[in-house]
Image 1 (cartoon, rainbow, N blue to C red):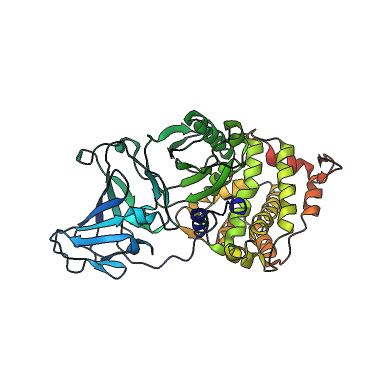
Image 2 (cartoon, helix red, strand yellow):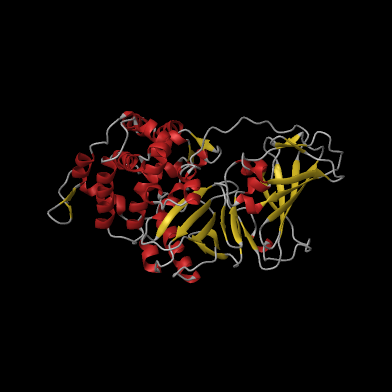
Length: 482
């Protein structure tokens, strides 16, 4: 996520408050209602996206209550049962008196949602976390969601099936609802309402859907597809290939600016979704070379982690944004190492004197993004070298751990690295992380770079092929052979 390059607009700062690339706080312990086995939602929005109406019906007795993320109660206009009885009690929908077979209905003020930190609204289009609209019971149960739209509006989300959204009128009830699990509504996700039909294609074994907001982008829809294909192919060089089978992307014009992408963010509620804010005047060639899409997609090759672990998750993504683009032919080997070396220099001059664990936890307050990202990158490079000396690779070990971490929503960094070390059969990654995490100063990256033959000469980067670990340096950026 380009946190250190953000334009200081209020809605972007609001997105920042969510945490770096969707870092997680501790989720609540919840138990499912013992008799509730499923819930069916019908979601309707008006043509101007000022109101959303939801009806929720239950398989079996209704739960005692429905809950939603904190801002949702402020947006609630009304909530009633089918017979008109009011349901709102504080910040929950009280269903304890709902008659058997009765459904709950509520209305959300989407116009006011534009003021919140979780929503992007541009003209007649919006990006909304589905949990803000679809209040949920405690626990994890199957959910079915029918989205009914006025003509000329499309809904796009990682859990919506392609053929079930074509902007049909709301009276069309012939389509089957999409399925997800209610725990997806507890995690921030992306539900986009856009005027243009979403762009859909397959690349590297992954089905991709792209919701593109209206605006004045210089790049065309075809150019957006070529840009994202190139980024996906680069990340396909990670470990055993591109890490997910289905990908959702939201592209939003962000006005004038010289950097290709102003901001990027990964959300995982209901499936992997990447939001990218693209500056208007940027040509396709600059987008293809830019690192942001590769950075965000690299996050999908690791699990969600907690706030204090941002230096691990962001360090890995920052390391791989350069390495994978070199492997994919988007930049040269020289460019990749020059970017890493210059990033170390930028990271060295910021920080608050905290340990790296604490710096990562507090970086939204201290602004020490560069230290967190680039100290984490140094750890990733040293970890990759240590693994390669043992006949392994960092991306290979992370890929091998995927079957384990995909069964848990959020991981502590230490637990993830301990799992990787278990797969290795020896402690490598966790002891190195403990050393880095305890440091109050930026690591000695000069020595690390010299060991692989990377240095800056009088004018340009120099790569020495006689350095002790030069062969490993070349192997890191070499395309995989599968």
